[in-house]
Image 1 (cartoon, rainbow, N blue to C red):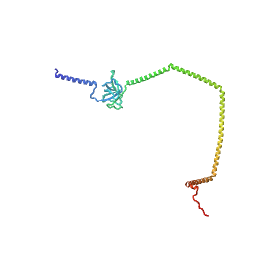
Image 2 (cartoon, rainbow, N blue to C red):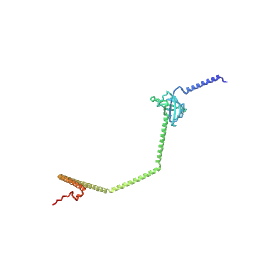
Image 3 (cartoon, rainbow, N blue to C red):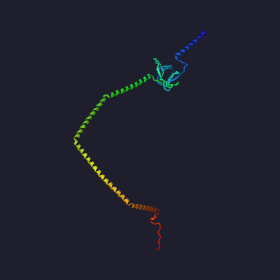
Image 4 (cartoon, rainbow, N blue to C red):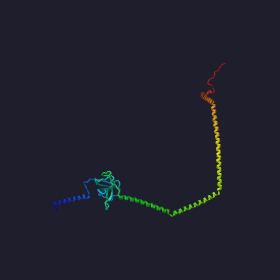
Length: 302
């Protein structure tokens, strides 16, 4: 039978073993319950394969914390939201970048915080750390660019080869030969036509010279006749202008000499016009005046 003392010894042994186990976990696991921690978030645009919960977090190679949670980013399943817990005294600035790095040949990854500067303000706990680029990421982007450019170059080369095949097609040469034959025929016809025209000009050179001389003489005659007509018109126009000036001067003299008579005639015309207006008005008012006078004259007895 188990005595009470044995039970006490077993209980003490278990308590000591548990205490030693806790001490080992605390020492080798780096757990510090009395240390203050700060939480930050990181959003990675791509896959985080190899990064596990509890993975180490480094600041320029120094271990400062661990990965606390890995979940899909809210609103975008292509991105991953990683929550890290670091020591409260770790200086994380607003320009600090988070980079995924390999922890060794096992394929496991850790988070390395880099590129922070003292001039940038400190990032408050709970803030978002921007994702950075590693040399491998840059090489991967350059490799993608080179592959894309190589693909475009291959497509261009294939297009050039296809164009060369089209140009060197024997059927194309048949058409070119036909065009050359037509060009030769046209050149021959033009040469014959030029020879014919040259012969015609040679045969009719005397006639052409005579025609040109006649045209030149006719042109000179027309020019002389035109000049003569212009001179005659100038003389006649000058005479007409002189006569018109004399007529105007005579009319002016006549008007000035009979100024008094003209004024009297104008006054008489005005008086006659007034009398005619008065007579017309009286006739409109008393039409009987055409037949009778206004009052009969008194008859005198003998």
